[in-house]
Length: 143
Image (cartoon, rainbow, N blue to C red):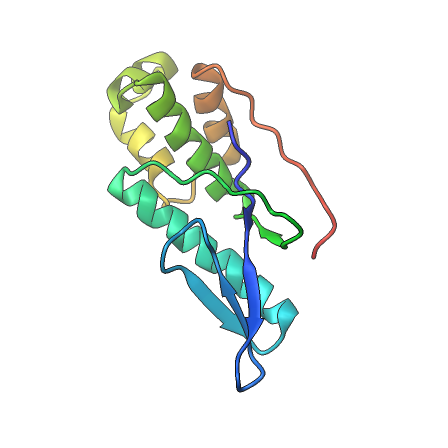
């Protein structure tokens, strides 16, 4: 199971703004007045890119090698939703089959996968466990 920390390319435009491009998500970019603001905006940008993939039920791209570039990761809940999405695809299980394993209705599994729903991290952790995965959260210093 991959981590969901994606490398970014940073450049400075002619107006002095910092531009960020996600090479792993075609057409996904953002900017900020400076590096710190651009990296903060990049989190929202990445979450939107992940949300588009989840809503379309498309596989998420694997993060490419950072090779010295900064990386950006989504928030914990979005990362857990992405992991659940990937795990379901990997094991070839339907939402209904996962719901049966969890003893809940299929609509509850749909909400766990819905990027716009404020799922509880414990519910996502239980769903991942039902698929044979363990959720781990790593805390690192901010960029």
